[in-house]
Length: 295
Image: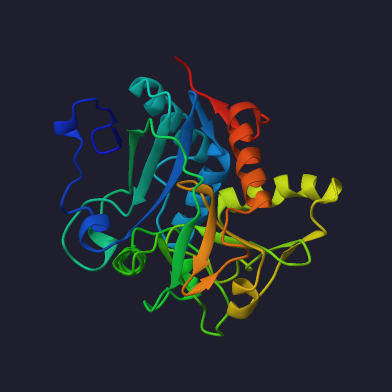
């Protein structure tokens, strides 16, 4: 774990702590992001760093370091951990200071980063989702990756209570939005890939990469096109394929939404192809998405 409060990296789990007076802890004034570690490479690190910088700006948190220093610290933290496969999660907070509402008493913003080892394989088995009854965050907060994940946690819990993997949010206009920690996409009966607009939801780094990789299927004639647009629940439930997309699930097929079976009720072939594209991208993609971690 790295902590700018300590000014370095610790490997003793007992020392991996955050001050209670950090405003991220008691006021939720912090942002975070995650990058996958695959075979000692950080996947889409730069894309995720760009996003946390944007989130920090939206949250009115001054960066504790410039972007390149932040990037270097994150790579060094993974290097010290000697982790081969897992994830790197990192936070930028208003920092410690006092227990007031305003961060004016915080002396300096803070950076924390932790490496989480994960040897499990990504699951490609089809899952069930439900429509969330938990109100989604308004666009100002949904479009930044803040530590305020109570709506997300309650949405996930609601899904699990109903025997589902995740719950899908609808926006105020009734259009399909996103899952609690992932984007959603569909393959229509016309073989068009359709993904909800990012104007009211978090812009998923993995989702954007999937959109780019899917262009190869358009060139091959397996997809008629790709569209990022508003879509109704009826359009989603009548699609041939449905998938969840995110760094935690990569590309996960959905075979049932509420009581509606998606397509033929089996994992969709295009969904599987897109998962394979991402897995291959993580292994041998361009340097723009794979950052080597020094030994």
